[in-house]
Amino acid sequence: MTTNVFDESSGVMATDSRWSIRQGKYIVYLDDTGCEKILLLKNRAIMFAGNGGRIQEWKDWLMSDPKDDSQQPKEEGICLCLVDLQTGKKIKSFKQTSVNDLAYFAGSGTQYAIPCWLANSDARRAVDTAKVADDRSGGEVKHYCFKTKQHNIYHGNQVTIRMVDDAILRRGLVMTTNNEQSVSFAVAANDNAELADIKAKIAAGDLSARAPSDGMYEEWTAEEKADLKGCLADMFGW
View 1 (cartoon, one colour):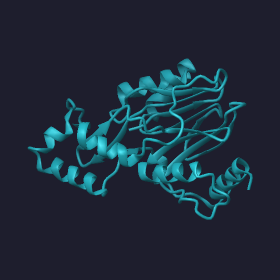
View 2 (cartoon, rainbow, N blue to C red; view 1 turned 180 degrees about the vertical axis):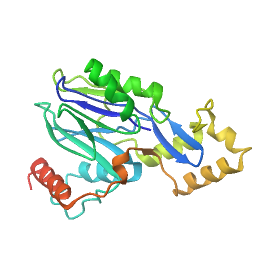
View 3 (cartoon, rainbow, N blue to C red; view 1 turned 60 degrees about the horizontal axis):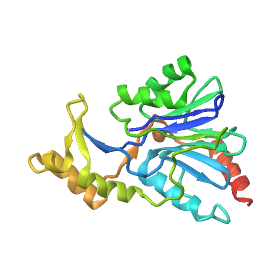
């Protein structure tokens, strides 16, 4: 459940705040968890989409101020966009959709966000538009403006994917893929064997929240991996 947009022309990065788990016809989700899809670190804004567990591995590793790439997590399962916080210029994007080399998109809401951005050149509005059409995007629009430095991003990595999973168990919502009205996941799981099984798998750690994007299923090329290592070496001064 994700829509990510970086608009280099206007200098705004924006994402939705929904994390979700899709199993069969069910989508279990939670908005506004405090687990950010944008990490502000070492003069970089790093925008993530993909597998929540893999994103968490990357956030933890990046926050550890690594001295080399020996413990770097695997690249598969994530989509990335790295932007210079001072200039607002894209450094590199991976597994994202580019439009005219001016805007970069990832997530299940991409197909709805792009037409809106083409019409309005507004990253936040594009995310809001995608939220209406895409059942896997929702919640508060989180954003960073590179020109004014104003944002609503929580610094650091205090809220983890495991915490999101636990919150989903307590207060998450569930809907079906044909957009039936959302109801309490915890309550619905009491009377539905399929949902009870999903609940048990989340509790056991066998299922975890995601910010789904087509790029998360693509294999990384050797060139892409080398490019990312170069970005990281520059970022950490290796």
